[in-house]
Image (cartoon, rainbow over all chains, first blue to last red; front, side):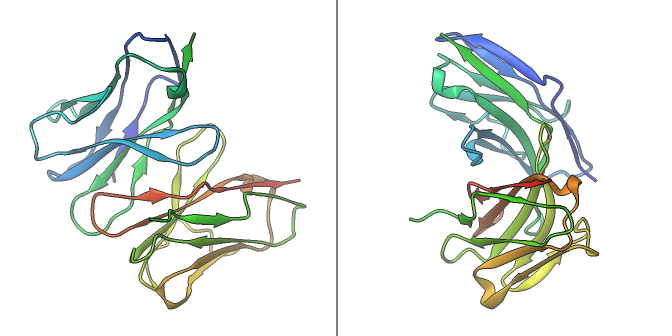
Length: 115
Length: 112
């Protein structure tokens, strides 16, 4: 079974600064997807960024980028130029590549961006 | 493109009562998921449908929870009878292909 661990329950960052959220996972699979989802108080899970395990290049989406270390089973999220609207819960998630399998989530990190 | 629709947004019931949640996935999405998110935790899969067939319901408490997906489109999740520990957010998600999942806004259930 796959597990996802987020070791930082809460983090805070000053507006315009950079913050990194950590995630590790455990799997015996070789092909899989990794995700970071944002969940604001509205409760809707919003996809921030996705990484396919077979791709060596780290994914980037505007101010969001990941550091994917497959051998170490590590998948951290870097948010640059933090904005007040980035305040939310952030969840790391894993999905096997084979079959239409569900997401497995970590417990989340609550990020607060401070003005 | 319309997103995943869920209703109601909020529900408060007494323990031992029954409750039902509704989900309308994105048009054309064959896969539908129901997740339970207890406060302070990540979402946990309850059941996964492929069209109108169940793919995975191994974590669904079948003595009190049931779900159906008629005609492979809308889905309902029912709890009967509800317990205090069922208080959570119930999230519905859908996907068209591997490697993606789109979520609704969820239903917050409070059992008192």
